[in-house]
Image (cartoon, rainbow, N blue to C red; front, top):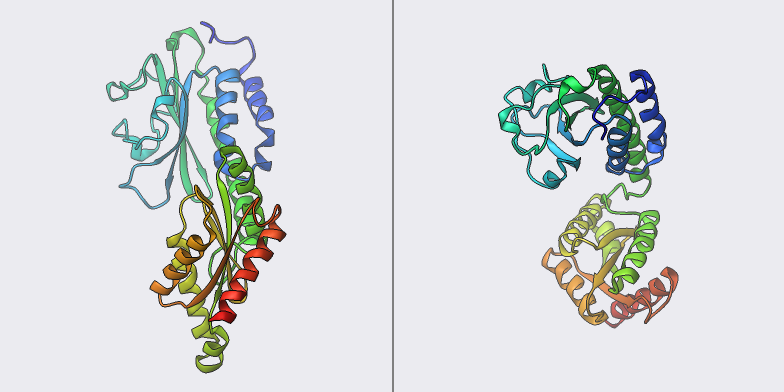
Length: 314
């Protein structure tokens, strides 16, 4: 970063930052915008380091959640945030300007000036906490530029989050909250790429709840819905971080599991016994990508046949 303020006027720098981040509205997740924020701040607005923080509305006593960091503050990314200043609850007042870093900001190594620019985004409060590595007297104060940028950031993040919410609803089963068919097939494509990259096996498991029609006929559809929701909750509990689970339709669920050793019988048994522990009887079949099929359709057909075989055998 140069020792003096760039020749570009303040308003032009704000316009350049907005132009550089014009693609944000097309992002699927608000977190994906952070690299663009960092680049615009660093390259155009001449900021050496910063943090992006959020705090849900109505949680005055809880610290904000850190979303990301760059430059001189990057080492804080992923850590628990502790408010660096007693006025944090007022969201930057009067720190909505460049000031000498308070002593509590000793972790901002090399910072000669610092400030907080608050914004709101879809009911949550956010803030840019920024640092510069050269003294304040080396440039004209550009608080107005950063105030405008923060307001713009809040607006665009709200649009991204609304879009992501709409897309999530379109891939979610309304009864169980699990993925629906569209969401499952998208999750499959993502995990196929990851499994090939990391050389892990990918298993597709099909679980069919037993006797659901009898429950519906005997106790009513509300009782059947309770069984399906209980099965969904247990499947969420059974699967690990990189796994995905969804409802294919009716009484049928699908799990996508990343495993070290692809033993289909062991996977099917684990899913079936886990459901039984929750009081849900089910038949389960599994198939391995590259062994039982090379595509979603082939693996699903193989797992579904094994599930049906178990159901008829029992």
